[in-house]
Image 1 (cartoon, helix red, strand yellow):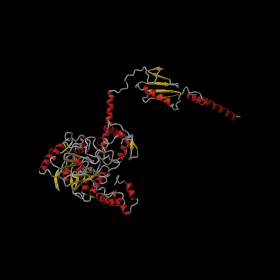
Image 2 (cartoon, chains in turn orange, blue):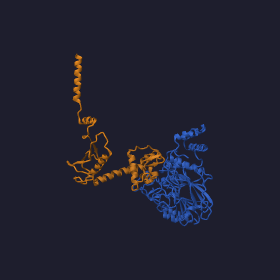
Image 3 (tube, chains in turn red, orange):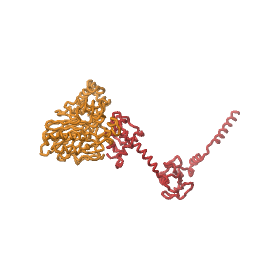
Image 4 (cartoon, helix red, strand yellow):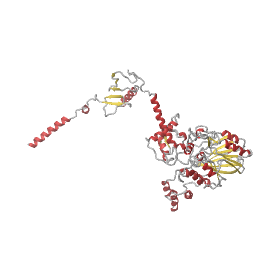
Length: 236
Length: 381
């Protein structure tokens, strides 16, 4: 009889604990309701623009499912359009019947259409300042100069050959024609594949990783040297 | 014909079906000094020829039939060969440039009949160092025919020619041979750009060795040499054919790469009165042909590497070689011969190591209708 009492107590305890710890969050509710086929009017997915300031909430799509193509295109269109307001933080909500509501500047706007006006002052916050432009150009020049130095030095190889020996002023490198089928490699190559091949073979050096800053510098130099040439991928 | 350097794998492959004797020969290639290398490589060439791996003579003599001005090809007077722009590093005989230079020497030595002499076209060393020049001298000593030396900028600007003159004699001189008056110039003189900036000799050499390095001055022959040339030519009959050896082209092609002689017009003026003048120049590492009046200009190939064609200023008479294959160390490189005809005119033969040889004859140049002109235009550089 004692055993029976203990067992009963344990069972009650288990049920009680389960009830106590049971998660009755909305997600669980939704999941349970979905299982029984209830409509997901609470489901939504959020898509961010690349600047992390523009956000679109798509209603009727669960966070673990893909947005259908037509609605995804609408999301993209809205985000692209909102990027006009460079520095603003804007949230858009697209309902299941494709109505768009905008929240910005602490206010809500009900009648937004893609391409239409919003009462947000489009001051030219996004344009770079002169100082910024100078800094960016200086950084670019630094990389191009480094690439120029590497291109003309013998440190990439082991036999004293430098890229500039066969390519003075980066002549005959044709960076603007990549990607193209490189017959000798028997596959389509990018500029950096060709650079690496040259480092390995005529220069008898160690190939660079594609993300190596030296590779970036070399490419930057070649592209700068060939600036103004028409981009003709696949030529030659 | 070796596409790449002989790697261990290739040696192993070649060894697969060879006899014990051949095996020893091939193993010998791996580590040996200069003397043994030549002995071994010649043996290997013979063995490989027997097995049809490598052609014994990369120097094919091609009879080119072309229309001469008077309907008959003037008789050959004599032939000389050239080896040019070896750009040697002193890193032993297995360095690719050393091997290429040796190959050129072997090619010339395999010529039958032997040329009357061999012109070395300049840029023997890469950085003008004594050990590089010594290596070059060692390699050129293997030539059976007598050698005439010409200086290039890579030989000169480490010590301004001290070592060169000590090893090879004067940098400009003239000689007569079988009725032709030969003149060798030092046409890579540069106005002093280093003193003001306080460059060390090594820095100066490094700047000059950069083809696209615009810190250096343009090449010139210079007033002293022009005066010497005038005096030298004053005693020569205007009908005597002249052949000029010069490292820079003696005309103005592309200043950025010093494919240029700054006082070209003045030099040409001195040469103009002569009926038959041919200029053989180095430095450009490519097929290059030009004519100004009665002066024919012929470029020499390099053994080390080919340059691309300049983006502008290319003479109309040049039939471009199509772009060289970077995957083949020898493509676009080679050596050559120059046939001197009885009338003093010169035919230039480019012995490209991986392509059919190309001959540019004096009669073609005179008539202005080179084979291939108007066809392949070449890619945009």
